[in-house]
Length: 183
Image (cartoon, rainbow, N blue to C red):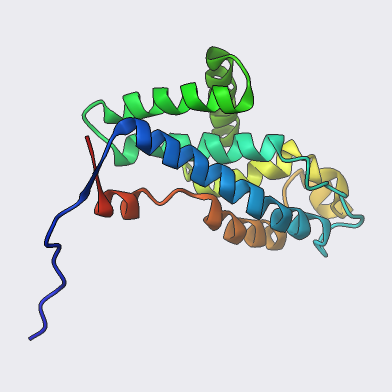
């Protein structure tokens, strides 16, 4: 009988401040490296009658969508007020990164979270909401054939491809929590 591996030293302890830094830096790095791929998926989509010609530098709305979705996942994975403290730290640090007012950033992220929930209603799956959010914020309906354009609904084949790509932009709290203990 083979016993499952066990940890001799347990989880690595990590401070809340460091968690916020790692979260932000990881997501920003993923956006920087991954957005060009998303642009390719959008611009080369055979479902569009003409290419939207999104530019790789047009990532502001994408970044807000990715952060809005990922921040919404925090409360489901962290408890005992840790989620609130880390979320506040993320907003504080992220406002410095973006060079904007923290309260305004929080308001904007919350507006994006509401938008994502609205475009994906009745589903509450934030992962799929990200793709629909991209579709709306980048006004991709304008590039669809008349059938889907008149329905004001993304072509499901395009949406599926975008959903699969968005897997790469979701912070893996389960893996993080298996390796780390937040102190």
